[in-house]
Length: 89
Image 1: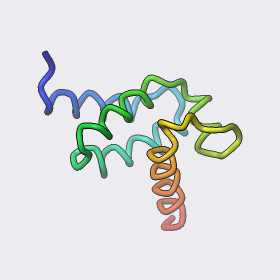
Image 2: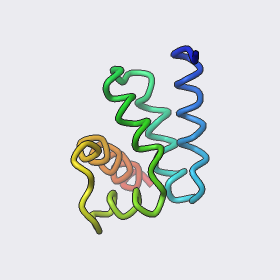
Image 3: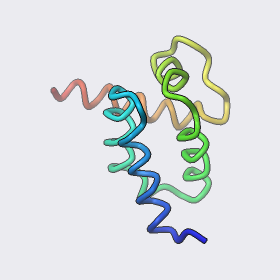
Image 4: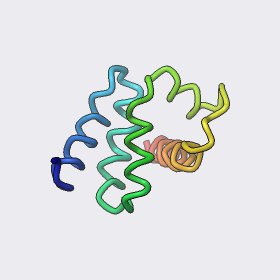
């Protein structure tokens, strides 16, 4: 069974190594900044999000297609985080 530390490490690595650079640059920094402080329920939602393909994730983040209800709050947070990072550049 995977312990909490190993789980977070795996999730962070998966966030940085998505398959598309755009999602790496969005999910990786968000995971580094937020995963350690998420409650177990939110980590479960993030696990579901990590299982989605990058094309769907990008379309949801950009508002091009409707986001699944269970992922909407987290994807909204991630999208806002990404927008804030871009403003600082």
